[in-house]
Image 1 (cartoon, one colour):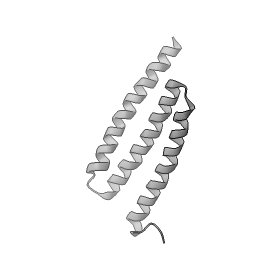
Image 2 (tube, one colour):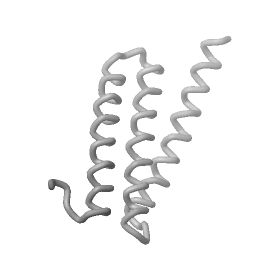
Image 3 (cartoon, one colour):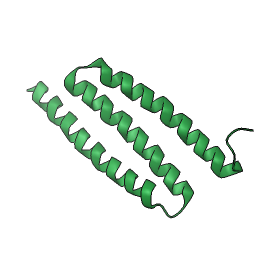
Length: 93
């Protein structure tokens, strides 16, 4: 019984994360300002990380956890670089 509950909880989480990714992609593509687009990108990579973690739980594979770690690190660097570009207009000083 508990395996069935965990399975459906993970599936429900995956569906909700996919919906959140669609909303974040819409915000990233059609945001009125550049700041909204950066927030959409931030939302998209965080939801992709969580979606990969739920796939790792569902399929009991460590490869998904490693991919989630890589996406989290690259997403943070991308968000920090875009924020710096929006503040100063340049990435490298």
